[in-house]
Image 1 (cartoon, one colour):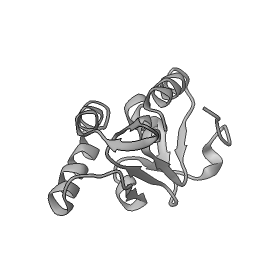
Image 2 (image 1 turned 90 degrees about the vertical axis):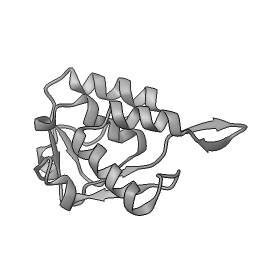
Image 3 (image 1 turned 30 degrees about the vertical axis):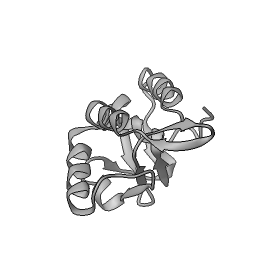
Amino acid sequence: GDVGTYVLFWDRIAATDLPVVIDGACVSACTLVLAAVEPDRICVTERASLGIHQAATREDGEARADPEVTKILQTTFYPPWLQQWIREWVAANGQLTLDVVYIYYDELSKHYRTCSVDESPIAGIEL
């Protein structure tokens, strides 16, 4: 999704006291929740995953990787544990591309509380 839209969305959620339940895939700009919302307000279900990839710009309707924006987003917005995970992934696999790489519950549960879907006060929010 559009980074600007998600930054505004997560900033609005951060201004509340609502918890955030990650249940299923949180992909691309959705992962910016980790920058806006305090870790103690985020919890993950056993179905949770984060999907990350290199940032992209659109030219003539085609997505093109943008390594500079990727670096800025990852080093400015992502928490230290995720920055380290990315460094380790890159060392083992090469640079991120536009293909999504997933981080699953087993890793997420090391950094966020485990919860059930029932903890969420809202079923979903449209951007």
